[in-house]
Length: 154
Image 1 (cartoon, helix red, strand yellow):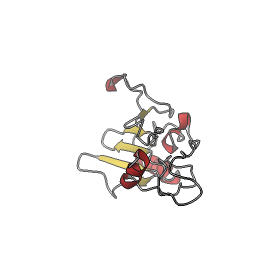
Image 2 (spheres, helix red, strand yellow):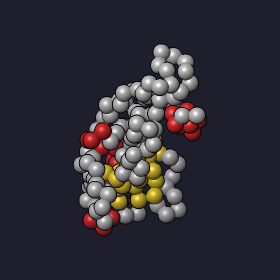
Image 3 (tube, helix red, strand yellow):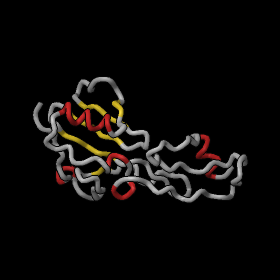
Image 4 (cartoon, one colour):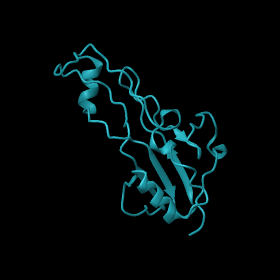
């Protein structure tokens, strides 16, 4: 079984949402116009560096928690759970796979890039963090040196 057939068993292909969505690896089902040996071209992705909706929102720093949640929901992000965890974190996910994690007690905001896949179907940017401007934070930069994005008071 080739790599694309294996990948399609793990992550079934889904239609892309109107925002462009995450590029999924092609399947080898044999149905349709494309054969198993053909690879679909990469889909251009929205946002800074193609990192999805999380890179398109302006800096949330200084906004009240209520205003930040309203901005996220207005941009298509949905809370993963209805309330923050016991530790105060809440994740907001976009249909393209990008996300925001907010620690409400401290106001800390962590942006995560939408998934991107290589030609073999493997995820190539797992865990990629984004700065307040939506640009990728270099992976070798220590966490205590990441540019801050902190919500203001209520």
